[in-house]
Length: 198
Length: 198
Image 1 (cartoon, rainbow over the protein chains, first blue to last red):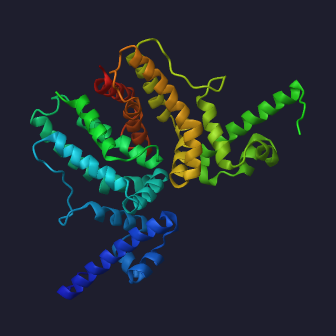
Image 2 (image 1 turned 60 degrees about the vertical axis):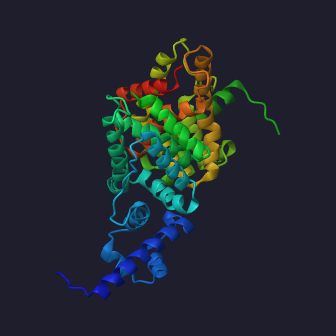
Image 3 (image 1 turned 45 degrees about the horizontal axis):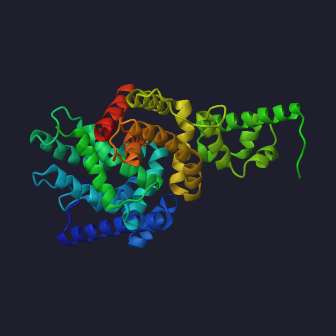
């Protein structure tokens, strides 16, 4: 069944959708993933439970979308800057990533989700497909351009370079095993470039 | 109060301790960290609950010890091989680590513990102090020897090199984002050496 909707109704829907995503993100930050309920999200967003269930199959799906909404542009796409200088572009991107993960408002819901996906292979697959893969593909595209321009070695393993750039940062954040600073971001970029330059 | 114990009693104690650690490790692998109880560990090990509480303050502490018991030598110490060739030694150690994390019997309890420590800063601190720090220190010692022997750059940041060697492996394992193979181990060692050689 298709429903024809007036512009007003579409605007109202989009407003509700945004209110639900914001409520989900805030609640996870405040109480932790496990304690958040669909009821609480609905109450905070000022919508009925049935509105949430019409758009999302599960709590995990709402929360994942609430996190995705933070990193997409208005077209829903992720891309990296390309000034033609891979070192400058990576420095910018890894510094921004480190800053995000050092920001409690940004990192709390992602931490909650990460704790959940370790035990839940199905949610892990959704996370990979909807969040990790598109992010990784955006970085890989930029690295491929750099390799084609001769700024990385011809035989550089770009999947491995991606891991070298991001995995140490991810581990530091997840295990709280070291500070997340601009200097650290620069050191990661320098190391990756030393290993993968021509 | 001190108690004087006969050799027989000491042997019995050590047997009980080992039975408890084995039971804890097996149960976490079978049912997951959250579902394991002190009662179940005691029943499987054939000891009374009070025996466990005499030696360990909490479930997390028993399980952490059960994991530690897998990687310590008979003196309870961790050290890396030192043949004088840092490349050969790292290849051996990283291959062995990758193989361990690809082994379900070894990785299941560590996965359970990792899921737990993400949400539990206190258990995370114990984990760092008892497990991660001694392991990292053992690797750092070997890297320092290599740097002193001129096999690594004089200004090599050994903490960062440690992260470059282990964090990608940790992330692949935790997120199940790629295969854990000997080739992957070798690629990590090659990359780290390219970045930190003189």
